Amino acid sequence: MLTCFSRFLPSVRRFGANRRGDFAIMFGLMVPMLLIGTGMSISIVQITSAHSRLSNALDAALTSTARDITRGIIKEEDAEKTALVFLLANAGGGSMPQDSIRFASFAVDKAKQTIIATATGRAALAFPVFSLPGSQDVTAQSATLYSTNAVEVAMVLDVTGSMYGSKLNSLKTAAKNAVSSFMAMQSPGQDRVRLAVIPYATAVNTGSLSNVVFQERGPADAGTAPGLASPVGVSSAIDSCATERKGKDQLSDASPYSSRINRDYRLWYCPTAALMPLTSNKGALTARINSFTANGGTAGHIGVQWARYMLSPKWKDVLPASAAPGAYGDASVRKFAILMTDGEFNTAYACLPGESGDCSASYAKRLCADMRKDGIEIFTVGFQLTTAAARDVMQTCASTGGGKHYFETSSGSELDQAFQDIAKAIERLTVTR
Image 1 (cartoon, one colour):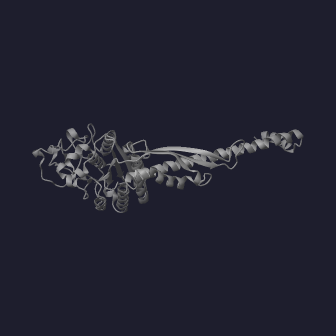
Image 2 (spheres, rainbow, N blue to C red):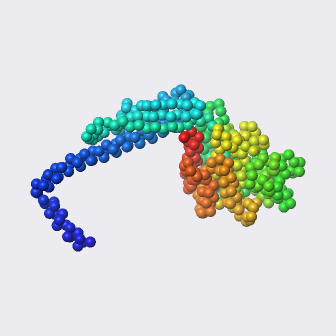
Image 3 (cartoon, rainbow, N blue to C red):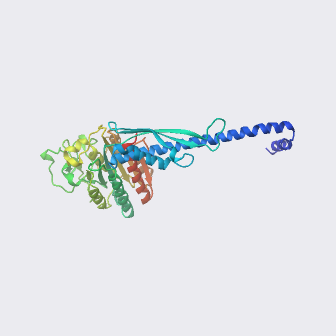
């Protein structure tokens, strides 16, 4: 290597010392070309940067305006004026003067609930060359939806023994802040956004829905439970908790009139905080979250099971009218589930057909897959997870495509941020094309 360099060095020195006329002529020709090339490169960068800035600002302006229409803050007639104020504030400045920015077109389609716009601006060029003017027009297009769609969100929250202390406090803070964010999406005078809260540990406390639970008295009862209308299903209640559904409807979201949900006779602990079906009552949701206490093992699949029930239209006959879920496949209804845990799913009383032993994880994965098939979009949050098995369940359950759906957090602030990111993602999914 040094030998090659030592041979090349004298040639470089001779070239640098060259004072002959032909080199001066060549150098004189090269300098203008280099300057022109540099100027064109700078101009291209300026134009590209201006277009990117205008495009991003237009996207944000339409999304913000759509959000305001959805929430009832402004009317459709005020959309263009509102969007322009946002656009000017975010796209103007730098190489693109604010007074050069305008809408070339702006259309609100009330029937399709869409906003479509084209924005233009003029980018000043620092080094115009050849016939280029001192500035260049840039154009950006964007479209968005504003929505009156119903939004149904089931939050499945871990209140097991490992959540005791500061972890539970962090969860309460994150969940309550999420409730506030979701309720801020609410349209005035409408219950467009509704949340269900499902705390889980060794079981799920069904609260006011305890009539759909079949209390097993022993091994002989550990099969398909009687339907809700069957007098055979009447038994003295030990508590309001439910475990897995068993028998013919084990993996189904069928109505309890087909078969009730079992309470396994071996259940030793019932969480104190009960689930809350879909509601837009912010105060009630906050109070329920505040009531959380931590104890018991992690039967996460039972929490997933009840999220499915709370979002299933097949359950509307046993729920209050205000909590009745919308139909699957209805374009005016968006359904979401948020599943949170701090560890492995390790408690089960019934397994999938052909399985045995510790089967909560595989059970949860199957339920998540069935929910996604029904059009329920699933977000998952791991909180201080320490095992690959715990991460695997959360990653497998999460929906794919359309942005981030799995969040792994290691602190209370990260947990809070994850819930906020999910709330923003859900809002964006309901209004953005």
